[in-house]
Amino acid sequence: MVQEKFEKLLIDLRLTPDEFSKIIGVGKSSIYKILRGDTKKITRLLAKKINSKFDKYSIDDLLSFNFDSQPKEKELIYKNENEKVSFSVNEIIDIVLENEELFMSKKSFSNLIEIKVSKRIAEITSSKEKLEEYLKS
Image (tube, rainbow, N blue to C red):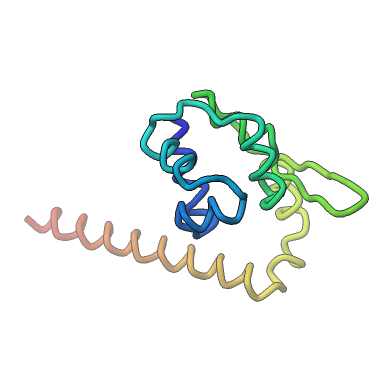
C-alpha cells in the first residue's frame, strides 16, 4: 500500500530513489525500505521533508499513504503566497463546462480534446468494422 503510492510519487516527480533522497535530505536506504515494503508507514518528519521540497504534496496527503482508503474525489489545491483555494474535481468540471469557449481557445486544451476525440473515433470505427465483419459471417 505505502510502497505503491510512494512508487507513483517518484514516477510523478520523474526521480530515482537516489535523486529523491538527496533532494529531501534523507538517506537513500530510508527510501528503498519504503519501496521494498520494509517500512510500512511514512513518518510525519518524512512527510514534512517531502513537503518542504515538493509543496504540491501536502503533509496530510503524504500521511494518507499510510491508509488503504483514498478519498473518492481528489481535491485539487492551488497555492500562492497569500491564499489557498481548494477545488473538487466536480467543481473544476463545472468551471470548464461553464467556460467552454475560453478553454477551447487555449491551444493545449483544444489539442487535448482533439486527441481524445480522435482516439474515440478510431475505437468506434474499429468496433463498427468488427461488427460489420461479424454480421457478414
